[in-house]
Amino acid sequence: MSDANSCLFYQSRTPRPFLDYGEGIYLFDETGKRYIDGSSGAMVSNIGHSNPRVLAKMKAQMDKATFGYRLHFRTHPSEDLAAKTVAMTPEGLDRVFFVSGGSEAVESAVKLARQYAVTQGQSSRHRVISRFPSYHGCTFGALDLTGYDPLREPFAPMLEGMPKVAAPATYLDRDDLSEEERGLKYAELLRDRILEEGPENVLAFLMEPVGGASTGALVAPDSYYGRVREICDEFGVLLIYDEVMTGAGRTGKFLAAEHWGITPDIVAMSKGFGAGYAPLGAIVASARLVEPVLDAGGFLHGFTYAGNPLACSAGLAVLEELEDQGLIGNAAKMGEVLMAGLRELMDRYPFIGDVRGKGLLTAFEFVSDRATLAPLPPSLDAHARLVELAYERGLIIYSRRTRGGTAGDHFLIAPPLIITEAQIGDIMAILRDALDAFAK
Ligand code: PMP
Image (cartoon, rainbow, N blue to C red):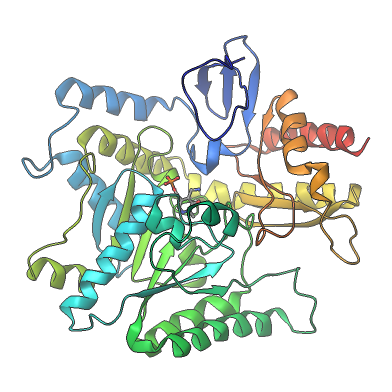
């Protein structure tokens, strides 16, 4: 166990064993205990641990140059990764800007949108509408866009407040609407909000296509996505997809946007893009936005480590692995197996009130009563307890109690995309055992 007197600190004092090594979907601690990485860390390790191709490519790059500042040199890994990224994303997204993480990607997307608006003589457009609940990162700008008050309040009043609209819920809505009607209803909330702010003041709408840390794999009704795109077009509002968690194949498409045939104006990616091999992220944007900014003197933004050749060599090998091993298709296929397993859990445990997800971004949520869908009392600390019970049994899962900050212990099950059906069976066996222990 880590020493309570360690001089290193993160959020809290949770003691954890020292990590020794990783292999495929497994991590091993220094005592030799094996863990199934059932959440790919924090939805990061999409191609599993210690992938030989990625390591070989990184080692070869290390022998040449680990860093060359982007204003001093072009590098092949960064050019090749940008080209590969564009080739894998839907048409219309054809310019790439590298960063080193998800919060950086979100803020870069918003700053690009802002500079673009200025080049178009629309400098009044400055407000960004995001959703509630949502998670977009922990730097001040990204946090201001995040729809989760417990993370924001300690730092209030922060930057200038950004307006938020409610995100489309699924089962929590107890109305008589059909799925389609509900999707349209929530899209109209965005329209109302744009009109309230004055369309001439609204720069962009930022959304996670499938909720991540905030809502636990909550997918909106299909009708929502297309209608949101239409509304943004109607008012000249840029549509930014935060695919930091969903991007790079996690949901069974390279971008989750592809499930609904949507082309956002800017996409933010990270997590699975570097897949745990390098701190890496990117925004992918339409040339229509980028070229005027470059023509007007350049994008006044950039991070020192961005696009370094070592990180980009890792990212390139990650994308090659996704493609050559057919991992995105595997995510779609194994996602169905996983969802079927989660539905079985729901049949078995009355305190599981919902299962949901897309591809290998899946979740289940606890309730105290299926009829009212009331959450378990916070005093039970259910989200932390089940994580510990699974951890003891050699399974890592990711939990939050954050739906709007008001309800819902939910658990994300999001293993690496290399997972097999037999390994999903192993996850289910441990989950059943942990849930039995929890129910006692
Ligand atoms: N956006 C989303 C959707 C995320 O899930 C996260 C991380 N959980 C972030 C942004 C922030 O990424 P990072 O922690 O790498 O800054």
